[in-house]
Structure formats: C-alpha cells, structure tokens
Amino acid sequence: MKILVIGGGGREHAIIKKLKENPDVTQVYAMPGNGGISWDATCLAGSPTDGDAAVGYAQAQGIDFAVVSPDDPLVQGVADRLRAAGIPTFGPSAQAAAIEGSKVFSKELMKTYGIPTAEYEVFDKAAAAAAYIERQNQYPVVIKADGLALGKGVIIAQNLSEAHDALKRIMGDKIFGDSGNRVVVEAFLTGVEVTVLAFTDSKTIVPLVSSMDHKRAFDNDEGPNTGGMGVIAPNPWYTPAIAAECMVRIFRPTIEAMNREGRPFKGCLYFGLMLTDTGPKVIEYNCRLGDPEAQAVLPLLESDLLTILQAVEDERLDTINVRFRPGASCCVILAAGGYPGSYKTGMPITRLYREPAAGVYVFHAGTALKNGVLLTSGGRVLGVTACGADLEEAIQKAYDETAMIHFDGMYMRRDIGQKGIRNKYGGI
Ligand code: AMP
Ligand code: GLY
Image (cartoon, rainbow, N blue to C red; front, top):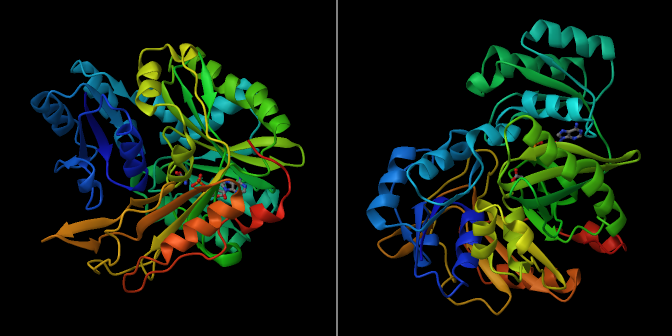
C-alpha cells in the first residue's frame, strides 16, 4: 500500500513511523514532510493546505490511503477534496473540523447539548466584550479568538487592563486576522489538564491512552506558552473512574451532538480537559491528534495504526480491538534557543545518525536536510520519546537519549513528568 501523509511536524513523523510497522505499507509519501521525515518517507513539496497539490500527488503516485493530519488543511477541507477524488482518507470533513476551526461553534455545541465546559459569552465588538469583563470583575479571564490562530489564540488576562490589551490586539490590530472577528470570553478553570485523543467513526468512540502536555517554556510551568515542551502518557491523574465519567458526560455526548448537527465526525477528536472540583470540563476540542501528545501516545499503541485509520474511514471501528502496551512514555521536546519567541534556524544537528535503542524514538519536528547535513528549521526541532515499564523509567530513558543530541542554542525543559511522579494515582 502507498500512503500519503499531509503535514510535516513531529506528530506526522510519529504517525509515519507507526504506519511503517505494517508490512503491507510499501511506501509512504509526506507533503511536505521535513529533513528527518525524508529518512522514512518520500517528501513532496507543497503546502499542507494545498488541496489541488494533495489530489494531484495522490493520483500521480497511485496513493491507496491518505492521512490529513494538521488542523489547517482539515478546516480548509483537504480531506473532503481527497475523498471527492476517490482516495480513501483519514481525517474529518471541513464541516466536522469546525469543532476546532470555530471556538464559537464548539462552545455553542457544548451549551446546546449540556457538555460541561467553562461559562462564556461571545462578542463581535471589543467594547461590548470589555464592558462584560468589567461587569463580571472575575480574574483571570480567558479571551479566545474564534478561528485558528496557530495555537496562540488564547489569552489569559490577569486584570482589566490586560483584557483591554488582548481585545485590542485580537479585534483591533487583528494579530490573528479574521480569526479575531469574534471572541469567546470565558471563565478561568483551575485543576489538572488532561489530553484524551479518541478515534471515532461517528458511531464508536475509542479513547487512546491519556496524556499530559507541558505547555510553558520553562521548568516549573514558568515562562510563555508554547506549542508544547513535553508529554507524559498516561496522565497519572486520569483514573478509570474519571475516564468512565468522561465517556458518559463528554465523549459520547460530543459524538452524538455532532451527528445531530449533521456534521458526523470521523477521525481523531482531541479532548483538552480540565479536571475541576466540580468534575471534568472541556477546555478545547481539536479535530486531530495533538502535537506533541501523539509523539508520546502512538509509541504506546500496540495495535496496527493503519488498520484503525481504515476502520474509522469505513465506519467499522466497532470491529477493531485497539490495544496499548503496559507502562508509560515520556516525550521531551528539544527546542531552538529563543522559542517560542524569535530563534535562529540552520544550526547543524550532531550525533543523531545512530539508531536509538528499542522503545526510544527521535521524531523530527523542525529539521531540514541540506547537502546531507541535518539542520534545524523550526522552533521545536526534535521530540525524543521513550517508553518504559513505568513513568520513572520512561523519563530516564528519554533524557538519556537527549544527551546524545546537540545543536547550538538547544534547550529543553528538565522537569517533564516530575509532577506526574509526585502523583500516586494510576492513570489510564
Ligand atoms: P488552547 O489554545 O485552546 O489549547 O488553550 C491554551 C491553553 O490555555 C490551554 O491548554 C489551557 O492551559 C489554557 N486555557 C484555555 N482555556 C482555559 C480556561 N477556560 N481556563 C483555564 N485555562 C484555560
Ligand atoms: N498540544 C496541543 C495541541 O496539539 O493542540
């Protein structure tokens, strides 16, 4: 089988490596892929949102199955384009991807169908939003741009002046373009954050092992928000009892709500949850696997990934047994100095050509190959994942592997998973 994967980050590298475990997979293409991905797949030039290019390549290469991985192409309908061209594809329709593409849509969905989430109001005028925030007088307050904003569309304002500033930047200066035409203003939730990725064919829903992202740039959850600096799986706080409650109160109701709205969701639904004093609540939905969460979760998947993705597309997920390996995993992101602010690219990466030990993976997020030399090409450069019998072992093995890798300015958090070790629940 020939597979086309749309995207070019660490998550896509993890997907590609997993797909290649299936002996029927003879060739994988990535559009655009990246330097490290080119060791595992044939990289095709093009933007992930270019539906014409995706269909053109798929037809030219005789692709048997396509995977549309990132949010932008999904929201822009690239999966629909591939399906319309007769190519079996994993990834939700644009209609269903609106669950991530519009925060207003997702909040209204949750309100309509009674799915627990933070209280909120929607505004299309900054002045009205500011007046509401002033009246509520509850801080911190969370301000979210309606549309996609490269993962940066959420601002947590600590006081009225920060809220004014956020509204001005989103709605006045349009730092996220049209994504800021409307905003959601919502209550700040406190608790432990959990990510649950779930495969669904719109009838059956299969949650994968839970995980915990580490979004802040520096140790002890300090510094600016990033796309994610590391992940552990499972999330030690996500107990079987909480998982059962989420299935009844959040996962199933979400799938049913999307069906009732005429937007059946087929793909991977990302539940960003906050475990609050009053139960689990949805912080956000995404229409895809998380990045870096996928880099920690997929290595724990024992079942064949391609079989699952095909079952999702064919709406027979109920016939598949999805199994996970026991133990835990830890993914540590190696970032370029300065990230998430400005950073240099083009630094040579050394000591990477050695095959990592069994159960250890080096996923490439922002790398490029130039004349055979591997260079950095992004803020998040590599994701180093290790699986272990328990969390302590996974963390140790992941950090041991990071010691083998070097590029100028390389930095990582040193405390990925430490909070998890201090928590003694057994997560699933
Ligand atoms: P998002 O871009 O939607 O992933 O949000 C980024 C991060 O902002 C989340 O992972 C949370 O840590 C935080 N966040 C978003 N909404 C809320 C909320 N209502 N209460 C507390 N934290 C939030
Ligand atoms: N790690 C957060 C996300 O994938 O959106």
